[in-house]
Length: 589
Image 1 (cartoon, helix red, strand yellow):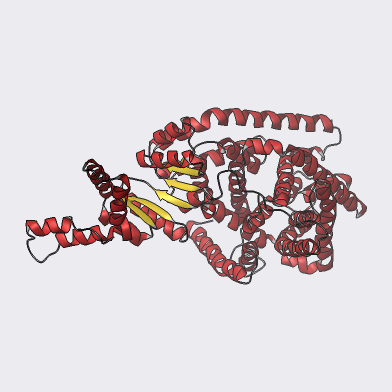
Image 2 (tube, helix red, strand yellow; image 1 turned 180 degrees about the vertical axis):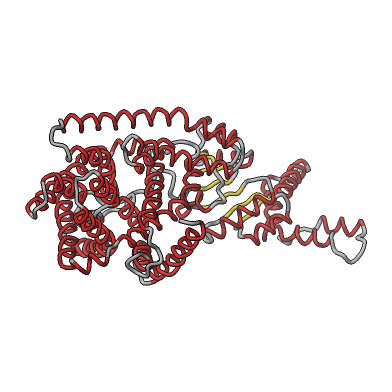
């Protein structure tokens, strides 16, 4: 593809997304449906603007990689260990039962045993990208059924290297199959253990060295290097790239860099994941669909019905209420993106024929396209069941400790540390950010909840759960940086209160115009505190001094602003006695 052709294809893809995605959301549908429709419209079976679908699909799979990294970085290893029963119990049962049922059905329909086995296990996999994106859009990643669905998807990702190893062995007849599969499992376990050890001892030192360079671009490049490097290393040894990215996320989940890394990766994740869904839309072979319409419809609905009917009792056995089990089954009822990889690989190895692979890819693509609608119907049915009282509705998960109503501290210098210490002393939750790694390390060594990152960025604020925050405190001592931070925070979260540090009354007024809710001019406050000390020394009581200071602070230092304006009035020279009079003016009590 020429450079000009690449630019033209990029413009066509972006233009289609701009048209279809807002239209889908305006109609009350998932943005995923918009991406799917956009891909179908510009693909080879639509208007034909894009013909190199395979290349686009391979590139767009990095969207799934970044998605798994974000999931990993938001999930601490301890929490993953607590999910081990759901991952291996519920997830394992789903894969093997579904694979057996579909495999037997394929064998009865005339497929050879090897083809039936690969077909069954390949169709047992669900779409990680589709499932997690729908959960994220609905805000239910941490819900009861969301955690169960993620456990199933994680086990399916773990099965990918096993299936890729199994596929070429099915083309042979004299191979000790169980021994080779066992070797593949051992190899995968060794590689994963090695990745954990290398990541634990190398990732933090690397990020610390890069952070000290104070280059946002190099830090972003390092984050991309870690994600893509781990993903490609895993693929090189036969594992899933998405699994490698998930492991990389887990290794950074408890580091001081997690929020900034997550913020740097989020834009790439969103763009490439949208491209992935568009590639799925482009892959729908409407010619084959027209030729075998009834067969394709029967296979699509048969696949989704089998998976839902198997998942429903498994989720109930796993402890989910009926409404939650219904939503979980609807979410995982489609085929998955790894089926494209598996079936194409089987075609190259001579295990499956071209006609079967094309038909299966069409079935998987259509099942993914139908998932948002199936999920919508499942959620409505679950709501009806909960309303009737047939099963208890899901109790919303409690927010993580220290998250609900927490304070976000932007800047961790002397002022930021003081604010954080006072919040700790009064039992108030906070999360602090600073771009100076030394400050971050000192704070973390003292047990304080501080992370490396720029809290004025929307992605960092999102990672810090700004929608649940009580307020933001901007404590940086750079006037331009403070103004920029206040403006950015107010732009992205206009209803979030912002308390900001200012040098003087002039900067305080500027920050108010940029969106600050409250400002504290430090030179003015230090003057007031010094005056309070003097007044106390002259014999005023503490209560009287407090009243005086509060009177001066009333209406955002209005009296002082008027005094300063009077001193700076342009009507000519100001006499000393006028200055004194202005300087001693005080508001009426």
